[in-house]
Length: 229
Image (tube, rainbow, N blue to C red; front, side, top):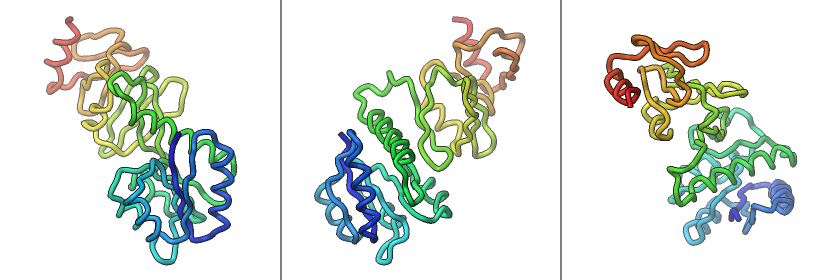
């Protein structure tokens, strides 16, 4: 069960969130607050797993509230203003819900929160078969076995996935490598490949299906040492 609170200066908005949470079997909405400062005082004494937080509030914005949190807490922003989407992404929000919030969209957000909650509370994360990346202003779950290859483009990554739309995420290659399992190897400054999908190697070119990938000089020794095993 995910323990949560909701913060919004409009009581009606809190009533909607309470109603939506009551229909969920994974969210325990413990309290609601119309005053952000009261919510912060409560959180210092009684931390929760998830916060539903409005962004535009008179006494303190939801952005300021989340930045002042002392603990690492999942956040789902709720707002009537789409221009805050980029900021919510930068604050690592689980999701970003535009008002009026409908049941289908709420359920999607809760599913993301549940999956991430299970992931961070796993006793053995090294055995996880999924990673979570931030794209499209929310967390996206990606099964490791479905990754075809990853391409680095300046400050961004393109994750090519079997039978799914390519994901574009703002993340350095180094950080991505730390998320991936042992099956993945960086073969070039611009490419990370799943070792199990490599079909052939000729000279300094790797073949996966109809794709060809160069082996960079910096990565050649590590690759061929592993490929020869």
